[in-house]
Image (cartoon, rainbow, N blue to C red; front, side):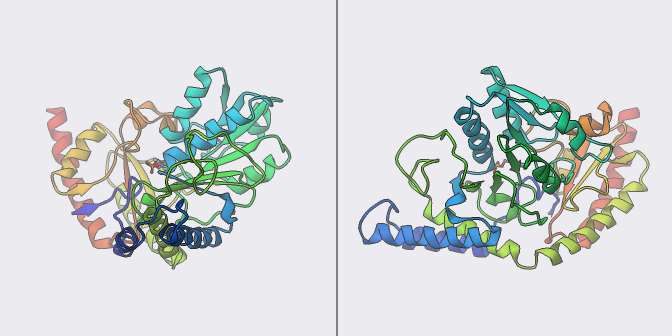
Length: 376
Ligand code: PMP
């Protein structure tokens, strides 16, 4: 098997799974229980939270555990809008966001909020000049992803955060699902940050919203007190411990892994560039973990399934989006046909050059076969 879909999800690391199993077996108490077993579970959560906070350079009380980035994005966006609606009902975002950001925004728009999409410059970066123009008196939230999940565009998060410091009433949320553990970013001036463990060899079903301590939110899940007042439910001890483990592991040698993936990305990109009919959509401003291409004359889904027959796995648009084209690609390339037929190759430090060589060989073979059958 050649797996080139690491941005959709990563395989869980053995050590992370081990932590999950051991904690599930050995910590049976509900962390909210007052007896010894409860206290033991609570202590383990506190130790895990301390570790996560120290790895990310945030405070322990700023960590809200969620079921993943989708819930974290929903909590950030709906939570801010509901809490601060008296200040205003206007939001700003980009055309590069994941559906777990655009969907809660659309929901809010249906319920009386307003949204503007900030323009991108020719490199796909948020235009600060345009951001300045779309900010209004009643703007309460700006939500911009750190790395777009389809093309891999890395945003100028630090510059945007610095600029937004001049607007203390506007909160800045960033969906960092595709950058945490991969691309280092300064989180200092970002008010709300979402991510999911499944993108860095952790388990599916756990993620975080980091919420700076001076901000409050309206919860979207109500119930008893949990690790915070913002998300009720019995804390998932084993998942939380496994998240701490996954984060600790991904931070070891992260620069070395990044360099390794850069070399792999360069290798596959240079080879794809030379294949007639292939257009490279990702630019030099993109994360090396993601390479987006479009193919002339061949539907991306047809190619995806043709590769699947050979045990090669990659994505068309992000695994979570619906509809016939990628709105992120359309906004970036302004080319409908590229947006309709894009493939995402996503890499990992686990990817080998041999795998990519084999992929390139089979990809070219399929190009010839499919192009022939489509034109005949
Ligand atoms: N944001 C981005 C940028 C993503 O890539 C994903 C996962 N594809 C999510 C949010 C949602 O993550 P989850 O499914 O773990 O909730």
